[in-house]
Length: 264
Image (cartoon, rainbow, N blue to C red; front, side, top):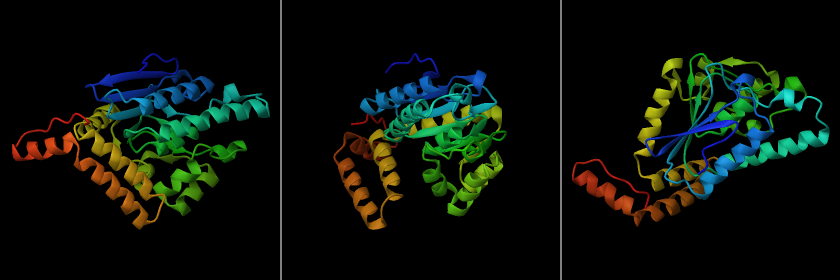
């Protein structure tokens, strides 16, 4: 896996955790075309071969902004065609992100506005600094959410709350994000990464094939009826029965030791 990027900083922690940091703090980590292309490359690479990565933490450089959304300075004076071409790149980035086989945890270190909040919602779950703020501001700019914001936000907060957030464009606090289900946990700013890493390492210590299968099954559950979802769950479950990790998990339990999962 390539580790050197212009707009992202990547770091491996304890072999199995990958920190992906949006690295444009001078513009509040706003997404430009280069960041869109690099997002595609990073997550397509993980789809092809995780190279031992079991959990991704997505965050932003600095303590002020997670991501301010699209870079409006770059977008200023774009033609309609140029705008659409750039958004096509962002759309591909969303799909690459959604196809990531391992869990992605957002560590929201600061403001997550517009596409920044949509990025939080694309993650499997999120922790946030108590000072973070959130908004989907697209309608105040003559557009609307275009990175699955209208799809993911209702699942997190409910349809009526999602309509209020999107149609007003009004910012809301980290406490409100927690109360409404956008984030799972609030942390003191100086402890955000430590607490996110603690959870990531706990996940990474579990059987990786089980984690990946469970992630897919949970995602399917929001798209189909319960009977169909149960059938998907059973197929995924039965594929795990013959794995070495399943045998190791049972052995370790009976031998009263920590299991050593290898992803096989």
